[in-house]
Amino acid sequence: MSFGAFYLGEASIDPIIERRERAGRWRDYFDLQLRFAETISDRRDIPFADAVTHYTNFRRRFGLGRFDEGGGSADWGRYLDGLAACDSRERRRAWTQEFYVQAPAERLREDWPTFGCFGSEPPNEHGIVRPHFINADSDGGIGPLRREKIDRRRAELRQLFAHIKAVYPAAARVRGVSWLYHLEAYRRLFPPAYTAGRAVATGRLRYDGGAVWGQFLDHAENVRSDRRERFIDNLKHLDPDRLWQAFPYPVQWTEAPIAVFHDFYGMD
Image (tube, rainbow, N blue to C red):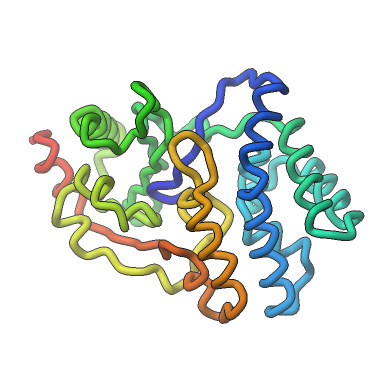
């Protein structure tokens, strides 16, 4: 996952009835990703199974992790086998919903510390930190990015960066990659020097996480129908070499020295 991945937290024991209700809400969410995979399979002339693996976030929603981590490969193979047996998009969507109902809960990796609505990967070999946004605060029936919750979110970020500073003192920079940078409600949580340089990510971009797909769900996990319809319309004339253009909010990336965060959150 990338910064702003909009992971939807779940309990370690997720009742089947709850997951079935969520699968019902996500009918169109699964459908639009299947449409994307179908379009890529056709225009890039690659197997549909490969398109689903690399261009949907189904593996993560099924609690199987990233494809390059190797976990859950047997279960993922079973899902792809079932998908191959379906002769229409409607049946593919229904199979995806049913598979989700029986799948394990999605969660961040255990080595990624979390503080409220934010988590983080350890810094990579270049000292770059990549935090993640988690949709984990619906208190008061409102979303986690509402103005009333700014202080709460910034306090969580201060905790996160204090942890990184203490545990990973060699961390040097922060890099974000997410559709959420389009939103002023999200940008205001971070140092202006960090968000000012944001730009559309047009290079190599992963399409198997919430950094791309989170824009289609609201804080209550309902599909945003207006964005879905724009996306489906964009698929009609999709350039296979410019996939980001299909999305109502193309993923943006930004980066800044970690010292900017220390100053902004009053850590020094």
